[in-house]
Amino acid sequence: MTPAARVQASIEILDQILAGAPVEKALTGWARRSRFAGSKDRAAVRDHVFQALRCKRSFAALGGSDTGRGLMIGALRAADEAPETMFTGERHAPEPLVEADAPRAFQSDAERCDIPEWLWPRFQASLGDQAEAAAQVLQSRAPVHLRANLAKTGLAEAIVSLAAEGISAEAHPACDTALEVTEGARKIAQSRAYNEGLVELQDAASQAVVEALELRPGLRVLDYCAGGGGKSLALAAHQGVQVYAHDVNTGRMRDLPARAKRAGVRVTCLAPDEVARHAPFDIVLTDAPCSGSGSWRRAPAGKWALTEEGLGALNDLQSEIISKAAHLVGPSGVLAYATCSMLDCENGAIIDKFRQDNPDWTDTFRKTWQVTHGADGFFLAHLTR
Image (cartoon, rainbow, N blue to C red; front, side, top):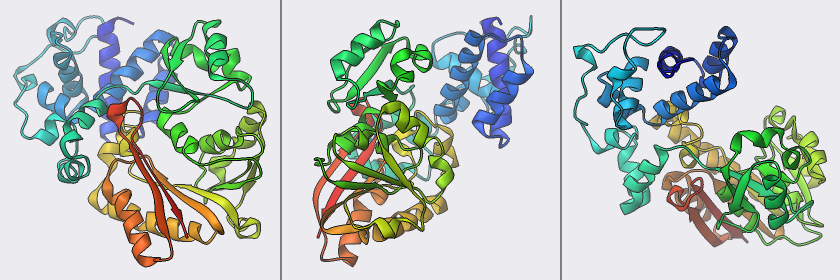
């Protein structure tokens, strides 16, 4: 495919997404219909689509409309490329520019920074003078991070193993297990280091949340909102720690047993009706459902799907989850509350409300990892009785 044909394909996919199609479904559907597209073409189109979604508001202003065509025109202008060179109408290229494709001035800071208008005041209140810098980071592609699996290897050994397969990685400052891939990221899934469980794909801040827990042999730890189990595996890599994983939707943990076997660790998966029977736990980690604002670089559609009503519903759910999880913690245990959000209404405000409702609990630790620090945005608090 020519570069212009890739742009046209991206326009068609974006139009489907803007009409309500899930991002992955739209991309997969195009790939199946376009057998002529090679792996580099598919990767390039995917990159175009995700970047357009990260910058949907600003690209729409630069491209004259909130359409797939407008977003791709805006993308080219944002990159200081003349859209006329791609929009020629020749050989599967998009049709030439018209008057309606002219750029317009940004109408607000929220539009320029690609944050929903209703959310911008809360975003600013949560991040203060770092709000604009954080929003600008969310406009770019996220780095690729790996976790060195301590059950099988060390950080230095993992770097050497990856390098032997053409994957360059370096230590990330977030924690002692974190690596940032600087070259060869697309080779990871087929690499020996990954398939033999030496490394796992996991954001550095997500790893740091686990490393911030005081883990030692003999502790019984519950990953209460386990999802796919990334944190469960990181917990289980610590020698002698007994790890249990739970999710209200057990289907999310479907692949966890196979992942644990590959990693050489043991994780016991619990259905919702089994958790109480195994309580109490020394540590209960609740990575609560949230807006995902700290990981919008990876899942940019979530930024535009979030509504004020939806955020309020999430706050109610977060309060419900932390209250339920507290009953599973042993008398001298730790309740760890985490989100991949940068919004205070999902973080500190939830902890403050929980403490107000439960005066016998106190928080002993609070930390925020910002996207400006080179990882996803995360919040973590530790509570004890």
